[in-house]
Length: 398
Image 1 (cartoon, rainbow, N blue to C red):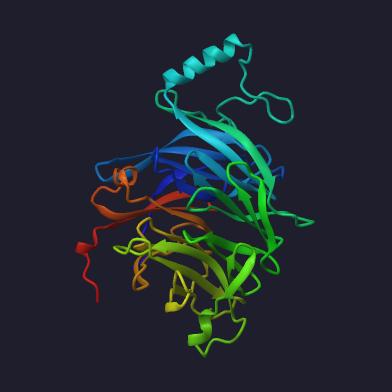
Image 2: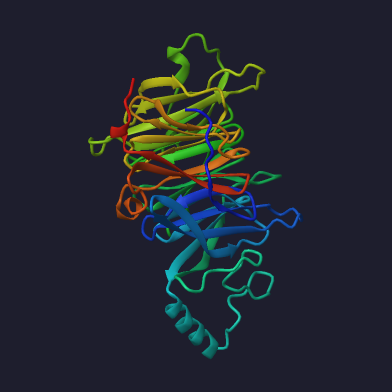
């Protein structure tokens, strides 16, 4: 558990806020940027080709998509469509991977029709397929084409509108967004017709998730964690009731995720992270709570260190939990026992913004090698890193 050095898998020319491993193609999708400020820092979505050679992971930029003046702060992916949180909007983009031969055919067709410079941007100028502020794409391998499908307004804050989180439903027919205005907005997918719009929290929504039984869980900066059935409040969760030494409003919820239970098909657990509301010279511990996923009874609560947690992710099988901190550290816990299995202090130089486990399906296993789990992390320091754990048969638990 001592401090160790993690090499960079990839370094972008802008701060990174979100990352996703695309199980259908094996691409790593990461995004971020400098926003609308005129600092010269670009905004974009980068598609990376991931490789595992002799036990070593490497990533190569395959395509850079320019998002102009808007940084992508959060992201959900369903099939080949990405829902990207950009300022107060949710932008849907379709991406497709093509071979150079396919691209040459497409360019020939477009040339014959007179459109030789690529699609037009909103300002009327032509946008090439490369994007990304001059970053080159690999021409000798498969390429990625990105098409903007549309967008919806996902936050109505009068100033500094910001979509805070986005999720697709397990049935892939709904898109849920949470805003800085405290509203949850539910959109029918793919039509983007608004289905629900309700006030879930006073102030910002920090995170949300939806289960296979259509229960929506939201956490906000107002100390609340709520379970919703459509737009009706089903219950509010109280993690601290079993810990009488923790005063009311001493902690707030930071993140929530549903996860499967290994070897129990159809059974879910909910995981929440609680962080201190106020900073202190001697900071108290943060906590993870595991809940039963049907009736939301608390099953286990454990401290997870004194570094403030910034993000949470659950592995595809529900076996592992990933945590990132505001000081750049990365940890992996066993979901069943909430036992820490892996920890790198200050792996990143600043706040970890997102995590993504490689899924335990064919495309993910191609990159696991002789390891049980692999997880990507991104941070404001522009770095993307890979964290791996060898098969647990090599560990002796105490």
